[in-house]
Amino acid sequence: MAAYIAQALPEATPAAPTAPRTYAWIVFALTFGLLLSDYMSRQVLNAVFPVLKVEWSLSDTQLGSLSSIVALLVGILTFPLSVVADRWGRVRSVTLMAGLWSLATLGCAISASYNEMFIARFCVGVGEAAYGSVGIALILSIFPAHLRSTLSSAFMAGGPVGSVVGMAFGGVIAAKFGWRWSFGAMAAFGLMLVVLYALIVRESRLCAPGTTRPVAQSAARPGLKSIFSGLFSSVSVIAAYVGSGLQLFIMAAMLAWLPSFLNRYYELPTDKAGVGAAVFILIGAIGMVVCGIVTDRLSRKAPERKWTIAMTYSLGSASLLLIAFQLPPGPAQLAVIGAGMAMVAGTTGPAGAMVANLIHPSIHATAFATLTLANNLLGLAPGPFVTGFIADRMGLMGAMQLVPLVALGATAAFAIGKRRYAEDLKRIEAMQG
Image (cartoon, rainbow, N blue to C red; front, side, top):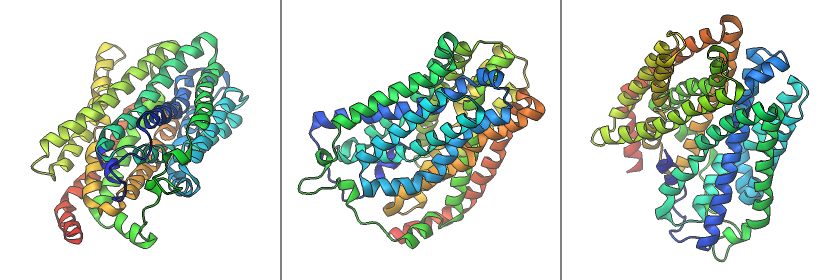
């Protein structure tokens, strides 16, 4: 998917870098570090679910809401905050956003109740809302065009890496020093990077020669009406949005609840449960990349095959996870969960390719923001909350047994998209020609 993000930049962006090479790599390192902080602050909560549940006598619905509120705010605010950042200045926006989510994470550390924690997590979501889109836009605007795909892939890898680090270290810190120190450590890491970013990165040093604004912010933008008509111009592209979002519902549920699952059914302490869940999330991240490579190879001469491959990933992951959560706790169950996790996010690549093919290149950036919106509102936000809601009524094992069924909805959406794809693609190609 990183390659398509790279394509989304305006054609006017020059091939030459707009900042000295050494300085550009320093900016990349700091921006990447903040992305790690973003996901570490977001996912550390999942590692301490078991402790919070006992200490505050929380229901699983309440626990799920603490996770879902961040993704919900990211989904709702990505568009408007990205627009504000383009006009106000990306460097200042990045510094402000990172400072907000770091301070909000510190707020989580000193929360004395569920309500206070919810407010702090709300602020984490506001701070993180547009960081992914603003950060990658800033990075790609200061490097040569031939490095876009490489830098996009490297930057976006910070998401799963940060999730793994946040869950693993969060669990270990909580077991040794208490759950508040888990949030405190993530906040300290973020605030340290914010200070370095504010001292080192300057908007003026990222500008194109003879201008006061970064190149990527200078391109002409299409009108609002043409943008919206292009984003939802066909049944197949809407199906890609919906299918991608529904499939990520399962990934989000696993991300939030696997530490609690390992704690409750395998009697693992907080630190080991966090590390164990992090291993599964890492498997999911690796599987996402591998599935994308496989998709490209299998559909090189037949682009419409991506829809079939996406359906295969959806049904395959659902079947494996349904089987896994019917098995008794033990090595066999863990092995099958791992196999399911390797496929559960495999639709990310095919969905990105479908959107890129079906949307005019002039609005690719906005198209991927729309895909991000669908992923958050249909999957990443409701996944943890709905799973917790069901767990309060059927137990966590019962909830985990039902969650994979959402893949049937994703499969249906991809099937509808495949049926209309050829017709829609011809129309889009005719418009581009």
